[in-house]
Image (cartoon, rainbow, N blue to C red; front, side, top):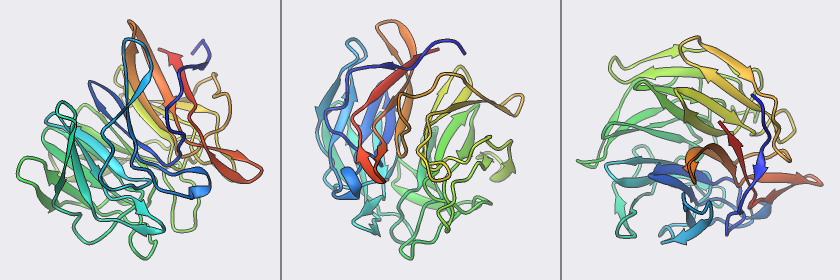
Length: 295
């Protein structure tokens, strides 16, 4: 892919360990300050006309590394870490009214670093770390209309700080970290219709907490935590060919625990990468950096 990552208007709140959700535009939700010093309740929304970020109603519960997904014109945020403890809280934002509500908590207790994705009115919550800091493959389906949880077949590879992507009604679980803090290249595909998991081609690089976005039926994995470094690289996955390729453009600096999304700004089709931690002298420094790549 030709082109470069281009800097754009920054987030209002620098943060790593944030999560994104897409409802008409990109949202940046929660996260941590530098060095995981403080959890954040801040929520921002991208203005697709001007490419700038605006703060919206904050979450009732500040937390880092939650999971989030949009379904039925609402944004749902699940679990995350408060201090070093995983939370079981579920909160839902009505973007039109700018109001939050509390929903039924996570089954089985707190979970941080899980991932969420919606297929229809069901949201699937996958993986994460439990109260004993153990990576899990637990997978639950949340009925957003009835506010009810259902257990489904667990993910084969136990991991947290993974991300999910949906293509063709299939859910792809991408990257993450295991109990030994090793960054994983693993990719597994879940079929909600048959409640089955299947192995998919792994990434060329293990990525903990990468930014993940879908555009044109392909999945992009941006940055993330590699083997002792914050990554600058981006990989693209073709589900039809079951193949990853590494793209040539590099992020300006390596970023871990960032988010990514596919948006159209001013008529331009863009992949954006926002927030994350930049490693400075061994310290994870919260970033407000936003970069875009033309697709």
